[in-house]
Image 1 (cartoon, rainbow over the protein chains, first blue to last red):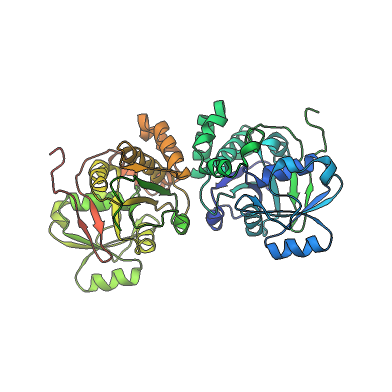
Image 2 (image 1 turned 30 degrees about the vertical axis):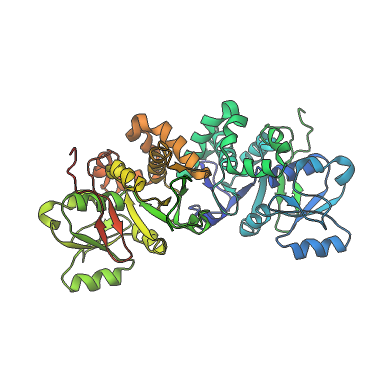
Length: 252
Length: 252
């Protein structure tokens, strides 16, 4: 059901997939899936570098099966690339040479679990700081309510996803198209206000930033918090993820 | 298991009962149950005004059964006192005349559900702004890790409970007894830093504050955010809640 232009659409934030069953919005809505470190940032990077489509899968069995059928596979568990896979979960692996024009199978600890949970929603868009302005413009044009679903870390609240939720909520509420009566959205915006002047210092508090550091996987952090390096808007239709953005080049 | 004095104890925050299964602490811990608007504030008020003990029950059937046995009963649903009950969920109803020296049966929408969920924890303490300093002192003396469990509103994140979690975490971390590596605790402390200078203005953002306003039940709000009007520390042993505080008078 499309929302009338006269009544503002709602923005709601879920800090964890465990809170997703409690969302207030009863009308149709678009889910924005967020896993800043690192799945949704990496998916945006893959589209920026020319991947044609991404097939998200929830289990290692599915990933291995599709690998045996000749697909390129990205798969990690607890931050580490799995042996059978072509890629882990780092945005930097998805070069134009390795994935341009291809279909990629994707299986991650947090991201695909949240994607499976939100599958009943009509549309799921992939959100990251790297595509936040393109995503905002696309959401403005959809005439639907928005639920920002943070993947968290193993279902726990995650600072980096909450900060993105705050940044995106702030952008959406800047137009009269949207309103919010959601405590999580209010809290996320306040955390973003505190963090935005020096987000890399702020994110030093985050537990997951330190988990990645211990694994030597924190090289993507400055990139992951730099806004608008891409105009892609990856969207999941229930089967595959494709780019619903305008196909403009960064800075274009 | 008691924690060694040499290794700092941990503080963790759960923003909703739905996140409780995800807590990191594996060792024994004390749960601090929080439902600022209004259950835990009201329980503290009842002890301050002389209630001898409180029996929390999870279902209306249990509450009605104990009422028929002659117990005083407090019971509300979605903020409203139920017809069969003696009290609703407002701190102001629990006067010394009405509850002094008596046992009270308590059944609320959010609070008792969270209490039931945390029952496997060794000890559950009841936290509110009204007893925050007494509670901090008591927690400092227990030699156990602490999990602050926000009741939320129907399992959703609630600003008022998050603010209390931040205020309590800040107090606990002021001593070398405690440390925290929990993103929720970091976020809660930052929200508290933003709110504390003028908490009644800040809490205007909170959705539940407006729910209570619509029901005409927001008279308790200034009281609910005023710290240290009591020294009681209500503690649940799995069956009843009694005061584990020092029995000091406010200001004493």
